[in-house]
Image 1: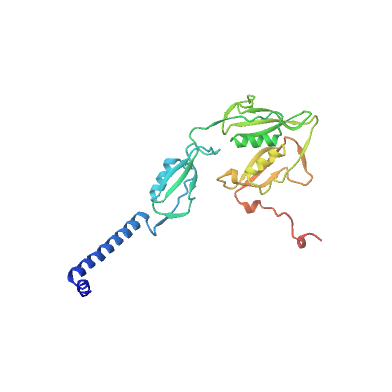
Image 2: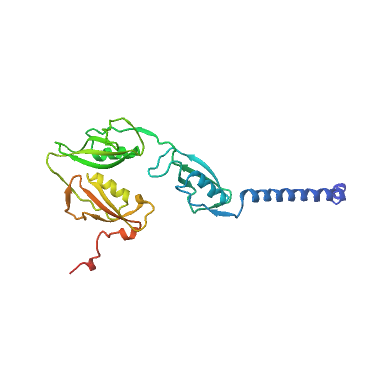
Length: 273
């Protein structure tokens, strides 16, 4: 026991213990330095808004702020966006991320895929429109045709004026006109209230009511028409208002959602006595 006590206080043991402690401290300091330099601890940057940029431009913007990227998807086509442009970013624009973070990008495909035209003969127009939209097709207008039936698609014509056959391959983003049965005599449709809806929602609603989009008037500056709001419409909405099937409705659009908002009902104390 005495020898062990003497050994613990010997110069050899103390020198060995000192070097061991110094070694551990150096290793810990090295690991902390490496983690700090590789993880950029405490250093963050704001994700730039690179949506709708071509991939080459987006890469330059990311590298300029010290961010990396990885393209994870280029198959889903977004109408109205240039081929090869960035359509989605994760994390989203303006998020605070660590320097050197890898962002995941989705781009619009460079070659548009083709899909078979859905079966439409004698199908309800609302059903056909939804099927066309699922494939990325556009329905530009409805043409009412006198017939024994109502609201059934009789034929479809493409943008070249050619009768579009069921299951015929068309590029996503193709445009069509639907010819819809409207009964044996002139028939009216109720006029929907479109005020406050987005432009895309208003288009869908008009199609559902067998009506067409007329003139589009822009109020102020609008960057994204599909997301703009309907400020007013003509003919104006009225609870009992009816218009002939296939009629066109003009829309005034604004980017200000508050300007397009219309209360559902006025407060009781504001009503005229």
